[in-house]
Image (cartoon, rainbow, N blue to C red; front, side, top):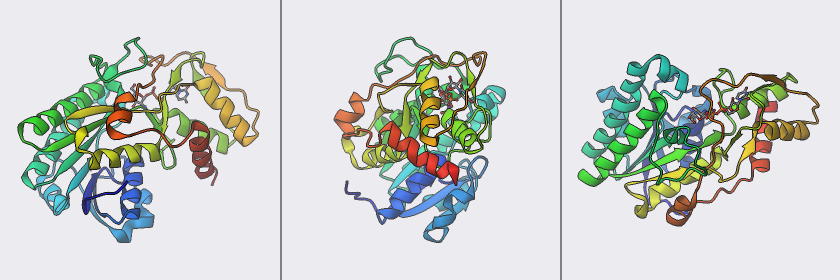
Length: 313
Ligand code: UD2
């Protein structure tokens, strides 16, 4: 994949996914600026590249700092957001300020500063709990939380900027992303990061429900590649894409795999299903495959192994 741009701004670049995008861009010789208010991002994720990036600590709604951060950028990868669904439920207005207005600010600053393309991180949350599987982009979104509404709003604004103002935009609906640097510390962290840290400390994991619910887990490096493919492919403009593996894994299978890999024999503790949990989710990725040329390169086993190596350190 040849990148034909010189400089990129990564919003939320100190976060889990954003910092992996930063790494890949630097590896490919692209200049990188990062804007992050460090509310959930962590400078530790960028410690190994701090000399090689321009870092702007601030909020994406702060016009002055955003204007400084965007200077000279050809592409923006927009990941800064309130990412906790629970936090958006508890603070619908504050989170909308960041996720709605913040995204709009990114689109607007891009329009004003001649940025060629904006890649927006969205979520499979926009599908809600529709029983139809796999989730496909042509389904009518059914958001069930402020978070999902905010992600959908971002997609709609991106489409308007693409069609009305000629700013090229692409939206990526991530399924369950996992990999090194995912924070396991909150009860609402991704199940893989939680299970990995349980395995590292030889603790008993909790499985909510019967454990037969399943998810589509996608390794963070594949998500990075989807972002880069979106940045170089003009056929993708104005569209949304599912970014998942198109495979499903139950939570029981997940813990079993981790036990096998770590030679642990720990039985999980089963607790009642989490309220609001979605039972089953997995992605149809044919659109991403045919337009972006996206197919996951990491098998689930490979991705888990890499994640595990990091968790065990
Ligand atoms: C994901 C997103 C969430 C939102 C939602 C929308 C993550 C981390 N969360 O929630 O932000 O976009 O999708 O659909 O990507 N589980 C356990 N034990 C644990 C933790 C989780 O059994 O210690 C179960 C949990 O009850 C659920 C499954 O594992 O059934 C996956 O949980 P999750 O929080 O990793 O992801 P999800 O899909 O519920």
